[in-house]
Image (tube, rainbow, N blue to C red; front, side, top):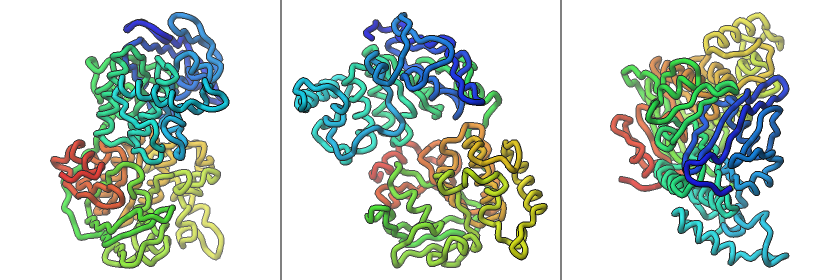
Length: 508
């Protein structure tokens, strides 16, 4: 797919893709020119991934056509797409950790030394690509030894080694530090300047504004508009995505900070593989305060949240106190009775049961209370009244209380979990990745409810890999690296650059 800069590499004309009961793409038109970054923007379920899976041959459209360099082309499989010089960089890396960089790049390719693979030739090719685009990666190192940012470079090298001219990047910054994002964007700009066509999929509006040449917005499977960074701003893009004005950062009124409600001292926790995941952490959250926990994924955040919630054992000498009561030796129910609530990062694994109804999930942790049962029998009228009120209060969009929870959107499932966890006015909440995978409208609502609870005196720990979310919600920010607290900084004056260095283990 060789082409000159500025020429149209890809045209997707009137693409329509249906699933049972869902019109995922509705006559979508989208094109990419050589030497540009064209961003595809939209909420979850807007049709972005479906459109790109059509391009990559994973789905076949019912209507419409794809043109590559002006020639109508039916892309029948990912292999066919790769042969057409189309590459896709997935959000979750498709690498084998125990193999080297060169071995990963060579996987699936025919070798000139069959049946053996000429890894020296592959390594030379990787070196050439690295030199051209600044992708500094050692071909002979095992993948498991690389940082997250370096692994992503390997994914890009894999696509370029296969001669890709058009690259689709699906949420490529989701697990990167700010410094790694800057490095990635420098690489992507070099690729654009060399004539590559890039499709950038992201929900982070500041990144979209920083990298894009053009922006196409999808909503409910349709194109709702096209713009450029020069013609728009983050607020306008959010409005195009949602169809109404969106508040990107919650209003946080000044509140009087009260007594300590959650106190953690010398907390040490082992990870799943036996190594120390949380290492001697000391934290305190007071009434009316949100403490943000920032860090690159895998630096102890999940283990910290599970230890506080009672889902993971802590080492001797660790203390966890809620309103002055040490709960480190208590089970999860006793911790809830002491005033703790927990919104887990894996909502469908740990937060809700998909086959249960909306009502059943709303009373999941309190079904045995006197309010909802007596003598082993449920009080159905009281349950319906309670659940109906929560659905109304938290703007949960559901056909009924009897609807299976798995049929709802991610944002509405998260609202159900949040409603349940806030219903008893807890004194402490642990909210882990509270808006991961939810659309911008639901995220706005979830943020507002967390701030409302803070204003009523709840102490909240918000764990998030989205620095915009942490900076928008938190009063103070603690940065984790390798299970240790690098520093705790007030949100006033905190910068992404400062936080990024701490996330990488560099103290200023």
